[in-house]
Length: 358
Image 1 (cartoon, rainbow, N blue to C red):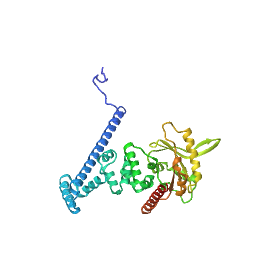
Image 2: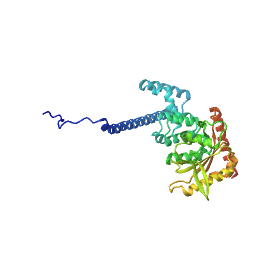
Image 3: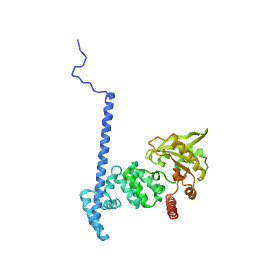
Image 4: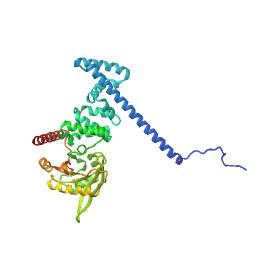
């Protein structure tokens, strides 16, 4: 009689189904470890580049004639490149020197290394404005921007579109210091003016419902323009007060600000009546929907235009209301830069005049 059963020592091969879970676990471990190794190597190399730049700055270029310093850097680069490769050519050595000059504080560099790569720093160095560089570096760290995202933010002049860019330098530095030390985002760092909505593809004539529908259709792009931290909650949210129904255009929650954000869409210019409408919505949400651990709700009125004296006289900040313009058509880069730089200049001038009169 033939016994076809396997011997007691026989161990069957695991099926694909049995090994699937183990495979995924190990695959995940390998990927995580590779990422951690890559991050550690990048941080080590970036710190090396900073130290090289610092050493050259301190011991060779400081106090020397420019021509003599240039000769020393060229000679040093030839020696290093011969032994360590093209990554230490004169071109890269000069980048390292710029790096240590733009970021002179070692502790700040160390704090940025977990999120920023060497390529991030290369994108920041040409900005030639310490406040702007610090803003982009800290936002990069907090919001984990890729190099591509960072370049897009710089190209879209994000800094110039924040209220931070119009503040006196000392106040702006204090706000960035709080961001660096406490990860504390303020509304002036989150909201921008104007918002670029060219991705909506709206024609020259459109209604408010068209604007809202286009935003809902392109919600992912709209949230990217709003910035990291926004979560969409509702559209045309009905609230009932004294038997009358009102409808909030768009309702978001901001994770970093820890508060509800009401977005109202207006086709024309901002009008004083818009303030009363927004205040009503904010007070209702504050009373009935704000949780105990949240900050008071804040409102953003998006309109086609606004008059600055009207905004100033209404003192909207005290009501937790922001008013921003939106552009539905993209401008050429030179025209965009000119327009935003002029807007920043005028905003700073208005702020200075206000301080003088007070």
